[in-house]
Length: 122
Image (cartoon, rainbow, N blue to C red; front, side, top):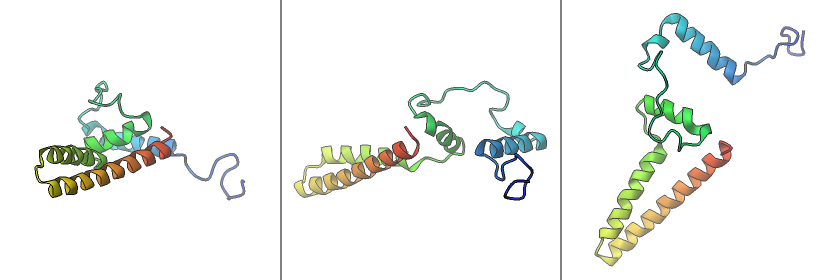
């Protein structure tokens, strides 16, 4: 027996790969996996798949398949809208206010992307 009381040579905790494999095997055995729209079909590259860092591809695909938009994407859309509003603003005070909001949003995006880069080993 090992120090934790388990079988000799067997780790006490499953690796993430083992947990995923077990869940996939359970889903296949129950027939749940076969209900997926892409089951048994070749993988089709989604738009942006190759542009997405490898460490983030699967999490982003899971979110996309679930119909969830990552907050970073919403921020990119908000940034584009703010840029257009700044460009169209004619009042100096409004332009300054919108510019400040845009700068704050760009800082938020930059910090988030840096955090993703660091944590995902990109």
